[in-house]
Image 1 (cartoon, rainbow, N blue to C red):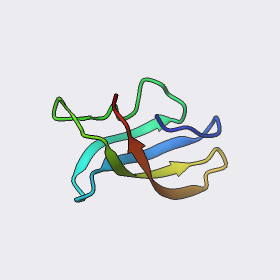
Image 2: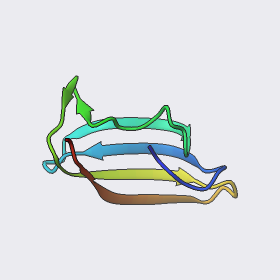
Image 3: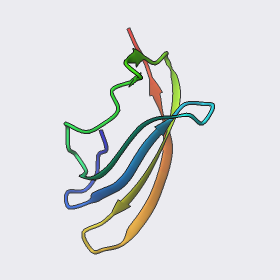
Amino acid sequence: MVHGTEGTKVLTFQVFDRWGELLYEAADFDVNDESIGWDGNFRSKEMPNGVYVWFAEVEYSDGMKEVLKGSTQLIRN
């Protein structure tokens, strides 16, 4: 799930594995929408524990756009 300040629109959100393969992509949604986000699966299979890279392009309520990127740790029990 993409978290942020209310009124922010996510233009593009992508998640990649360590080899650069695109695992998840969503576009044109509001931040904090619990129904949209990567669930840790790819092609109906659970991805293993590890670090995954994400990329987001957002547009704030004042019209300013920003590209954000980072990583997240997937941990399964």
